[in-house]
Image 1 (tube, one colour):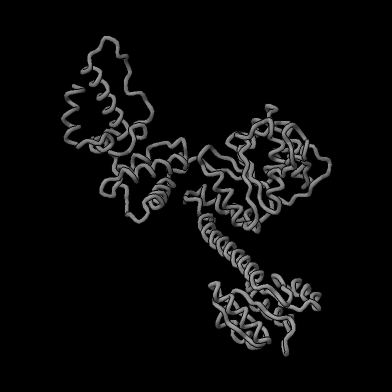
Image 2: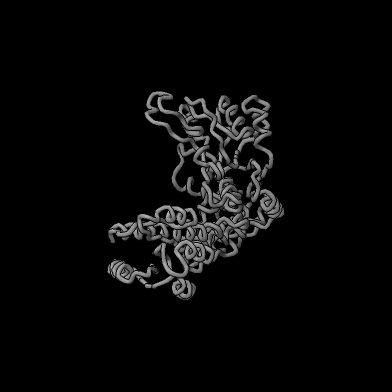
Length: 446
């Protein structure tokens, strides 16, 4: 870090500068504020230690000009005991701290080190935000199908609002990713994003986890504790699998959404909260409302802005883009591709696990790729042929040759059916040369 030491008393200025240099800092000395101001743009200091009372421009005026120029420069004010009130005023104007003369240089170094740590944390957070933003850009949800393009348009409308959102979709479709995209493209992006899985929360402590509790509220509550609602204050609260929330807590959630306040378990004082709620479910909430398993009033309060993510089988045109996306992600610096036969197999598969399933599959195929090409041979058989059992009779009283012949017949028939009778495509599905398949068909089928 570069530090400016500004003081008209040379002995103080030189002594402090030498101590800071010995501690490993880059230091520039100035006898007055005007001289320091003239060098700020060129030398770009991280910190300034300035006397309060100096001829010409005093420390207060100097502080104001520094902060106008660059808010990130931290300023420590040095002052005599008689002008402490002025130092307090300086802190109100943005100074980090003040020290009284005469001072112990060790105390000054402690303060400087504290600022160094603070700036390091700020820089790390800024770096992380830069990394997060591209990851959760509006286009982070891969696809170009009409359904996904429409979803993009809806995201643009709702992301930078405080509107409650209900995301519906099957397991693995990307409901949590959509939540991240909404949060990190809103005014709350630098505030907390607290995620709660209603499906895995212990029913006994569900209420305490969400709303917090006061000391002594129940056995084991030896201290007060904030719940997820308070932790998410000023940010976003994501309630995954909202359909698993117990009915008796749905009333409390409804009140929190409508009145923007909660009460801890065992408490009586309302606590104001400023949060945006995003909920998600893989279930049909309307059906649950009809069965009396979910409150109707809560359903309408949550579904102010519903977003549905269609399953992958309903937007097959997105599959190619997802394959390319995940290959790029998992290949790193390697240039790995998928050949036509392998891609065709994937295009014919239903992917019941949706995007999560294809992501896990591509990670595996990238590792298994030979000569940097993903081929049909390395695709798992359950994806090539589905989960159909290849044996249709029992093993009882049958020799091994008969059993193997039946398995082979079934495998070839399944491949031919999937390839629409095209022997070359069927051979690719089976991972054998076309000539081998042609020679086997007469032997097995007569």
